[in-house]
Length: 110
Image (cartoon, rainbow, N blue to C red; front, side, top):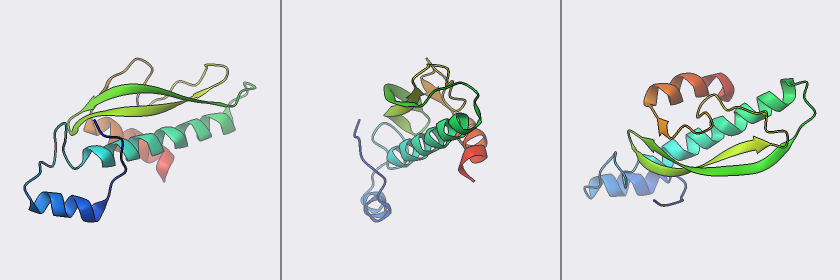
């Protein structure tokens, strides 16, 4: 697993050289990771702005997530009180389906 951001130009070069689109070392895995972490960040921001609990951000929890595009390490935001329950990737959830990413993240990212 590599911890890198998605580079469109590099992805095109890799696709032309025969690299897989999906899978553990697939080209889309870093993009899925970035989108998932952005959605989780938006989710905690929304939670903190609407909750009546006196809490604030408190770093991240790292976990390995498996998706149809490959496996990656995900940084999940957390709050001081421990009350924040992400909806995109719930606590203890280790599998991400494409439908979850598309439908749930849209709510927080637009």
